[in-house]
Amino acid sequence: MPTESQSIRSALTSPVKAAFLEHPNSLGESYFQHQRAALGFSGYLAVTAMAALVHAILPCLCETTARTRIAALNDKLQNRNPQASNKAGETGRY
Image (tube, rainbow, N blue to C red; front, side, top):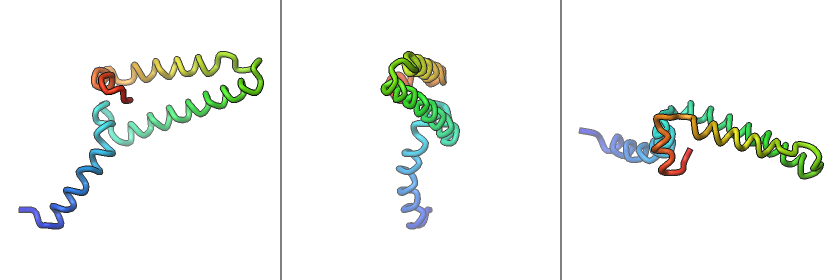
């Protein structure tokens, strides 16, 4: 039978586990696999944002860069994990 401290620890770790693992697991990924992918997307979006900023200042530059990169990122997200695509598509979460 679990002790009181084990029961408390279990009650506290369950929501923490859910917060950190539920979404990555729903995509068939570990926490660190999901973190790596999300950081990669973040860097990709940062470069895309910079291209849009350059275009805002100098409209003759980077005319289609942001649009092209966002379309490519969308394709990557849509094809990222075919086994989990139905589940992710239902919730709208990646």
